[in-house]
Figure 1: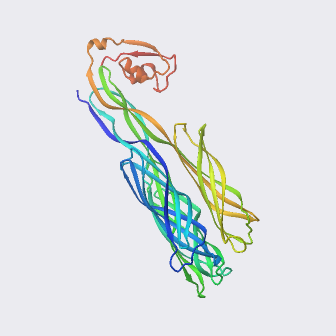
Figure 2: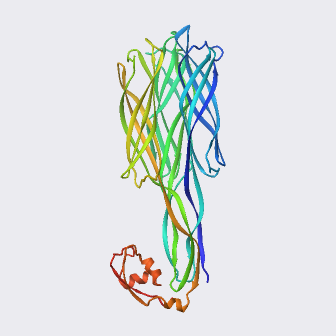
Length: 523
């Protein structure tokens, strides 16, 4: 008997493996020729970049660099600030059992802590503790039956599988050039010491054909003044930017995301029209990282039945992971930070760095509560008393609730918390007030199961087998009964049961309802 199975491949996410490791990297930084000796480190920080990522069996290899910036002082001129830069090469790997190069891999990194040890007046040992978080999602392609080609009056039951598929993270870059100016109320520039850039007033919009983004670069520049070697100034500038990414919207698009990062490619001092060094020629790279999540609905044949025929089938169970919900909230916050020996008259705030970390995830009643702490680091200058550059570190707890549908204790939760638009709202003696926006995003994945058919066979029933079915039955509906199950049990079709009993909606049956069911004798 001719029966053609029409199949198509579908791709399912089976599982996500995660690993979090800490890596220590260190290197000696040498004071450049022409720079004075170093007796005291005033401020140290670094920025890590990853240039290469290779995935092989059971391991993820990465290669990058930590750019180190050091501000230091010399005992002969304790209030004069000097700067030097260096780099720490990063080349290592993370063991992740079961990962292969064809899997989708997410790689995140962050410098947890940096420390130093002065080896001598010309050499500084710098150590960085890096936290690496990797996640690999295993995907599997399987064949499913979507239709049948046969002359037999075969009945089919269909099931819709919803599959959420994320695209790979892509990058788009634009270059912004701008000449920053030092106002006449401040001294001219002798030497650039340090810069800090944050994106404020960020706006990202999705249209049918593209992603549009714009915002403002807030650039803080710390410099040594001309004429007074022991004076340090801070100047703030704003640079607008805008860009777009061609990304046509498809019918199944469910979510999308785009994050912006800004880094300077160069900063160079130049004279103004009066010949004074009050211009900073800058070039910035704006990197937009984006991806989208598409929901596809696949209709498959989940069961078959044919009156008068014996149906044999082979099925299999598929376990897969699917995005249940994705929620994002942005909440304005305000915090007061206490700083010893701080006065607005004598101190200038260079920057405020905020690093959130999630320590606890609480689930209940379709709600996800994220609990954690914000590390707040305030870097400021002091031209009158104390250290000429100082840093204050505070820890602030936070709690944020998100409404998420379908979340359970077995859900895989992937949160991301950031702080943006950080600005100093007010200053007074020993205290500053900071305003910022706390951005909380959570993706919730649930494990799901579906039974799919692999093969189907048909065989004629004998007259004796057909005779075993009653010609007519008055059946009282029990809990869990469906018309499909009853049709298979009594050798008929769902349509015939509906027509005889006047049922318009086959999915609605009532416990105790009586149905007349006739055996189908003509095929």
